[in-house]
Amino acid sequence: MSNPFDLEAGRFLVLANNAGQFSLWPQGADMPGGWGKVFGPDSKQVCLEYIDREWTNIRAKPVGQAGDNRFARKESA
Image 1 (tube, helix red, strand yellow):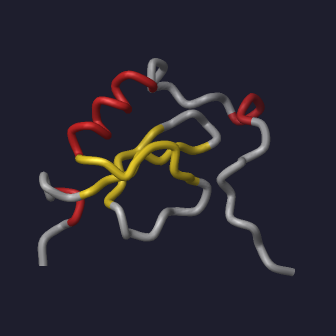
Image 2 (spheres, one colour):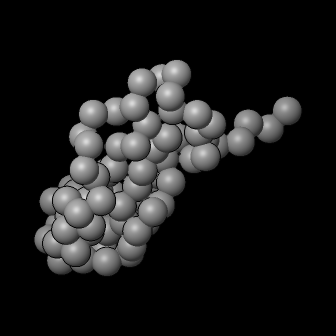
């Protein structure tokens, strides 16, 4: 079985977290906690172009400046 991250012809999403970081993610793969979809699905190349255009500061925001995590998974009580 091939790694879905390595597929050039696959469909991908762009995920972001509350610290302002972006990630290329294969469509259909489980999203990690604290991350949410901000773009896609689209081709790998188009998603990478989106990341290049939108992620202008690759340093994560300091924890105190991150604010509420809009992508955090809700825990059931």
